[in-house]
Image (cartoon, rainbow, N blue to C red; front, side, top):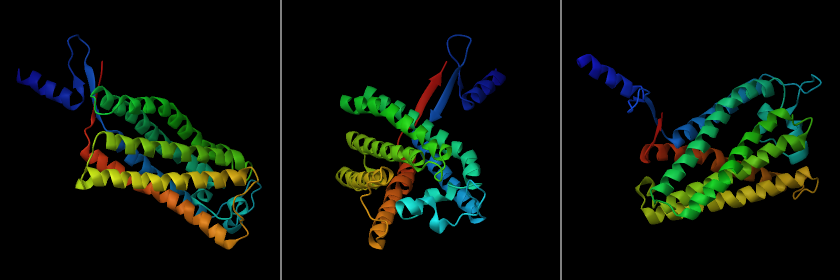
Length: 277
């Protein structure tokens, strides 16, 4: 009898929940933001890896050493952004091997977020229109994010348009994710950092209305360069500084702050209980 109880406890710890028939159920305790936080940590690790490899020297497609101060990005956009760290051999190939760690963990986050929003809708915590918004944008976010890998398929020195298209899609996906998070938090009347609901609403929308115009402006400038109708003159140092600063602001709001949001939500929001039979 004691042995059976011990076995049952072990099964429960392993996530195996007995069912009415002979087959057990698998119980999973997951949180979307655990995967989002891990994805961002993976991204930071990928950047550090790429920076390390690039610092040791990279070469172009002809095997010639690359001067990053005159990279393809500098020639087209007027400055180097973070992507220059994996634009050349061997950094591109090595970084591409690590990239799936970031890619797949973020994809799991998107899938679990979809499940979480549906759960909120079924529990009448959010309006129907917000659930419909998630249904429409979920496949868009998933596909756009999957296409980011094109930065490795098309080297910048061979096809700058194909190389950049994946990143343009990422900008759209990030804006959609941020909008969904803000609307979800306000629909559920969440109180972030114990600031009160009103302050949470003000700060969350302030965050989004900094990210959104930065994204639109950055997206427009990037597209202008690619279609050879630039909105800024890369020969003008002041304009280059502006665009470079815009890129840094976008990175802060798109790739740094969301990590802290994910950690907070992981600690304060309920986990998903998933059972598979």
